[in-house]
Amino acid sequence: MRPYIYARKNLIHIIDVRETIRGLLRAKKYLGQVASRNGLILFVGTKRQAAESVEREALRCGMPFVNDRWLGGTLTNFRTIRNRMTRLEELETLRESEVYNSYSKKMQSSLNREYRKMYRNLNGMRKMSRLPECMVVIDPKKEKNAVREAQALGIATVALIDTDCDPDKVDLPIPGNDDSMRSIELITRILGDAIMAGKAQAAIDSQQQREGSDAPSAEQEAEAKAAADA
Image (cartoon, rainbow, N blue to C red):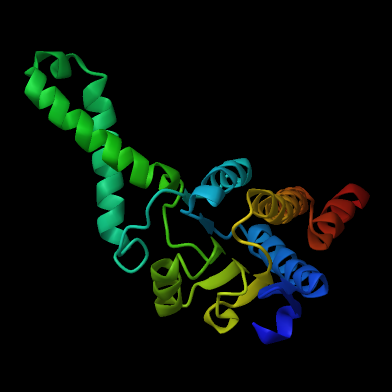
């Protein structure tokens, strides 16, 4: 982290704000590009200070998130995770059916416990129908298992890193305070804005492609003109 530290005061390292801005600009550009080609971006932040911001920005962007507990194999054993999400949907359907009311109180209690646990761990990943192209991480030191799985699969990592983190462990580090709720909220909002801009560009490109495919080609126009002159 030495290149990102401006000074040391009273045993506290002060991050160079210029490095924070540089990292943020690089991350914004990259995330916008990923979103513009309809890439999937997974938000990860399970520490108390990050959970709310991670969920809010991921939902705003229409992206999956993990903000309670990282399940081992979330990426490297994704098929099993998908099966668990299917089980979560089955439990939701069951709890709303008449059959559920016919179960004993003990069985209902057991199903409810299973549902609450699965909902807490998996609900944020319902939109993740495939592996993500990129992962946004708050505090890669705490989320080391998530970062390790992403590295194993070649998934790019964008991370807010404090002075106790190793920037070489992630692809696009953003030096900053990863313990402050205000800092996390600001950074995730800026990254969320970049993703939203990329998605808007993807929608524009898609519309232009549709309009272009509907327009007659030069050859078709020539044939139509020849037929009209005949």
